[in-house]
Amino acid sequence: RNWCDVEDLIGVALAQVKEFQQHRQIRVKLPDEVPLLVGDEVLLEQMLVNVVSNAIKYSSDSSVIDIVVRTSGDRLILTVTDRGVGLEEKEYDRIFDKFYRAKSSKNVTGTGLGLAICRGIAELHGGSISASPNEPQGTVITIALPLPTREDSNPDIIES
Ligand code: ATP
Ligand code: MG
Image 1 (cartoon, rainbow, N blue to C red):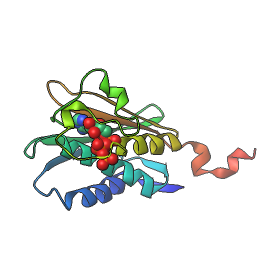
Image 2 (cartoon, rainbow, N blue to C red):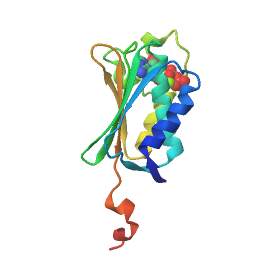
Image 3 (tube, rainbow, N blue to C red):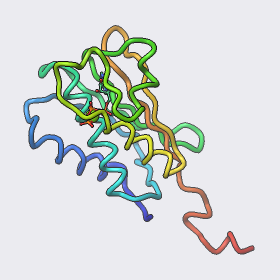
Image 4 (cartoon, protein in one colour):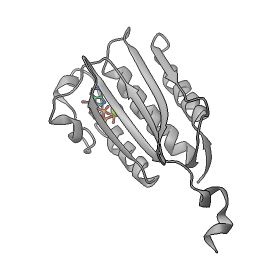
């Protein structure tokens, strides 16, 4: 566990994804002051790669994908929004189950493990990951992670 720059995490993750999808329009919106996180950068990158590759896999080549980072209270909120095939109401929770694959994606290959791993990574960092519909079309994946506390930047104060 160490300090991770969110902009770098997104950059490294996109570089890994873009190798096979260069034509895709991915927009990234960051806050003026990009927050740091305390965590395992390799795992956090893996989580982003999984979520962004899903956004690509389950939407058409020409559609836009938005990655937006903001802070809310003591959380960093990162959303990945696509305009793809979307999901049925009852599936928004189930897609995080191991091996679950939605009806809308039967013609795309996958093992159904990516999001189960992502949920494990988010929870390992004290955070959460969830899915919701994007209006009028597609899916929003929301990742919430705790922002560093004063104890993180100054380990000594835990003692006192
Ligand atoms: P892999 O293990 O290779 O990632 P996968 O993509 O099928 O395989 P998950 O990433 O766990 O598995 O996703 C589970 C299921 O959730 C997918 O099969 C798909 O049906 C659905 N899903 C995930 N992301 C999206 C998305 N952005 N839009 C629509 N459906 C999605
Ligand atoms: Mg996947």
